Length: 321
Image 1 (cartoon, rainbow, N blue to C red):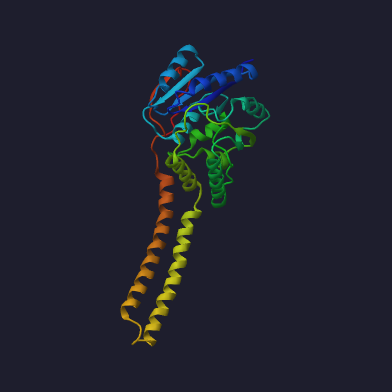
Image 2 (cartoon, rainbow, N blue to C red):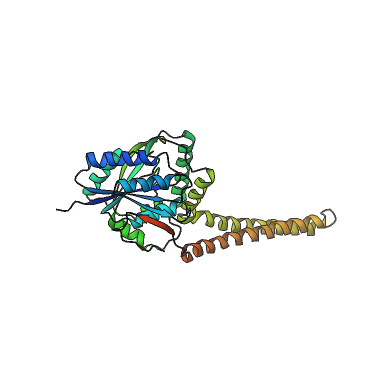
């Protein structure tokens, strides 16, 4: 009987200090606790500027189970990771990050739950050894996203998990040039099992996610799965319009009855500022609704442009433009 094939996907970007440790950790777990399965480790490198690609290439020469996709440039964390998932040919794919903050030791539990019928098994951080401020900020972000989105998002989930090949087919068929994996899993995923764990500190180096990259990722989630923010602008603009019209009417009437005491210039300025400011705010909010819909429907750019592949002769190339 043929063994099931499990693909371990490892996205990288300037992770030269972590790649070998990640490789050793994954191989140790798979050979010790998952010996009844075939496995391969597929790195997708987002155009690293250090020696990450060279290290991956050397690993691929030594171990045919190591495969690699090198991007032609940095296409962003979300797009590169999503593209890697769509290119895997395993019966399931386990996504784990090269910094190894998410422990490889729970991979056997992922597989066990998958064998019980769950198409998606995700790791949810119960605690974290990372910076307490960052953990708190993430908690606040998930709370905001939960309150403003129609989708029941998974709190403290960064993508670490197992995805069945049937779900990967869903990802391949989505026409989305700026995908948000966490939202897609929550919205379109099959029966899901959550595995709680404690997130470790990075083994080596510092995170490449600075404030602006985290902000960009957060805004991707909000703008992809929340219309509430835009509609608040529209409703606020409408409310202020009504309020300003009342003020304008009151100012005009007050001027009529106090012609000699109320300066004409004040009346004109008050009416103009309140009225035009409210009209602008209303239409900016309305314009935002249109932009949101246009942005969702007409983006057809490719997720990633590949520079080259290593040890991927047996992999089918999926077009996900």
